[in-house]
View 1 (cartoon, rainbow, N blue to C red):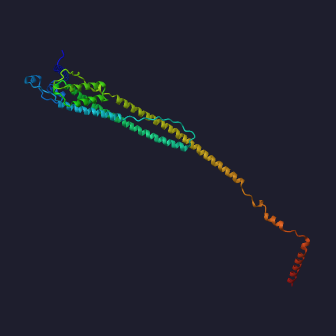
View 2 (cartoon, rainbow, N blue to C red; view 1 turned 90 degrees about the horizontal axis):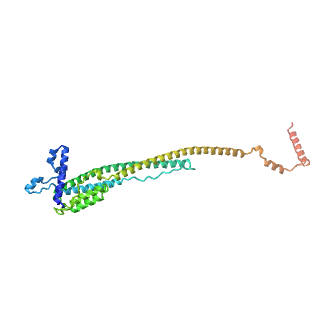
View 3 (cartoon, one colour; view 1 turned 180 degrees about the horizontal axis):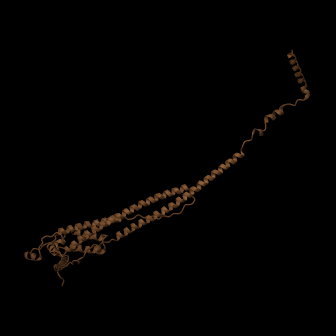
Length: 349
């Protein structure tokens, strides 16, 4: 014969009390915890009557009221949304892709072109250093968000434990009027990416128990078994581990690429120095060759002296003077002789 719901609740309550007593004995603080009772576990306590007092007075005591449970559910919803927000911020810090670096030594380039190429590689190295700095910052941000997630997750586990423990005490006092709130919480748990499937299913079953509390109605609705919510079996850290692994790999790739470019830059600068020496030697060679050609040309084109130049005017005069015969010159010579003798006679005393 199926036991009534009240009997099952009473049995679960007895088991829960027994577990509490065992904890009290192990902790060796029995007097203090016996005074506090279950109110130390469930939070606020209302109408703290014992079973015998309730039976004598006919008063049904409610240790926890629906408004307190609704407050816990409201806080649970806030914590769950914070978890999802932290996860979103954490995943937004994914690493940037690192393009591969390929290099082949240029041929035929002059020293100026090689030095310009080396300068461009310097800028690339600076960009890689900046990207490494940003990646390290993203890694730190992921770590900070993960720590926040762990804190929020611990709060979620405590709230679920609270709901779990209180569902066995006077469930008729725990009727939640806002059923939509419970449905919304169930949806949030189903969509939560940080909780594993077992943890989400346990939370859903717990919330369904509260959904079925309706002042003694649905007497045969089964209660889920007690679930020990804990961080170890509900927090899925795979996203965090994958992200940190990817960021570390990116930092390694950036460092390798930076080293490769630095090595290539050194080779280019060395080649540029060799090219500069060759170019200087070629320029000096061309200068000496040009000077030798200019000297040789100057020797070939040196002007002749005056003794070597024929006198054309003399030749012309020789051609135009007529030849005089002795007969043609006799009379003028005789006249000139007579004139001379006259001049000498006049001058004598």
